[in-house]
Image (cartoon, rainbow, N blue to C red):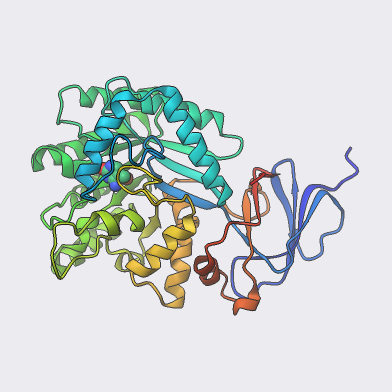
Length: 413
Ligand code: 17E
Ligand code: FE2
């Protein structure tokens, strides 16, 4: 029997929420076993976090780890468009090896963890005949699982029906153990192929019991309308909470009459939505002169309609966007600006979009700072002295956490 009541105790922190009293958190055997003011009994390790914010970890709900840290290879994206990015990645991926992808992915995950990100959904490009990116990220998922949780999406970057072999590659990727089935209907050769691809993705997800996350309508074309197909499939299959539509930037170009109807369908479908404000604001609107559209989906309206919306980074130094850091507070900060969510409850909502809403999108069950949950949390140097608005100050300051606790262990960051 250990002489300590706890493996680790955090003393005097403030949980997320206004006007919280200071509390202690006691952790043993990787679990939170007590939350109370002035816990009795000592911890083997004691951390004084007086007045600081204790938050559930950040959740990266959308990133491409296979292309992370390749910006400039083999060349820079000069037009700044999605399509030039796809071309450059198409060249870069010719030469990829397991070691190359694994090394970059792990380096990126360490960077993310240092910013308090402990749950990551990554896409793996499966439009490549040897499925190297997928194999590498599945291996990485296992290798890092003691300190960060990774979900892998089988993502057919070049489309399922654009090349004869791509559909079989997607199926193989799911059989190899991808957690999530992906797609890119707006980049299929025809509208009909796009519709068919969404139907096929649902079929596969049901057959193999997987989640769904589709790159959907990532274009400024107001005629790109695959989100309605995703919503219809979710309504018909009842898969709602297991389904995610990512990007949906065309939503920002739809007329209001259509958008209003679609929001009603989405409420019925209960799917999750992910916006990627850092890169959407830079990739989209490139064909406009002035007035120039913002490139981000209708985040505020979707959130107001009660839908689960999260924010992702999408890119960490890759051919689409070279300025990613891994810090989810950078993402939330950009979200606040681009989506004009500057009201106090709106800023709080943007913080939720990089924490608990992302957890919901990933279908995580063991998430949150509560007794009985696995002890994964972050301590941020955000105090009541800044006016008591914890989430507002976290986004304003965007600082690295003081401590990151993952599965009961303090990470060296
Ligand atoms: N691929 C894609 O289709 N869209 C993106 N935003 C990225 C990769 C980063
Ligand atoms: Fe993406």
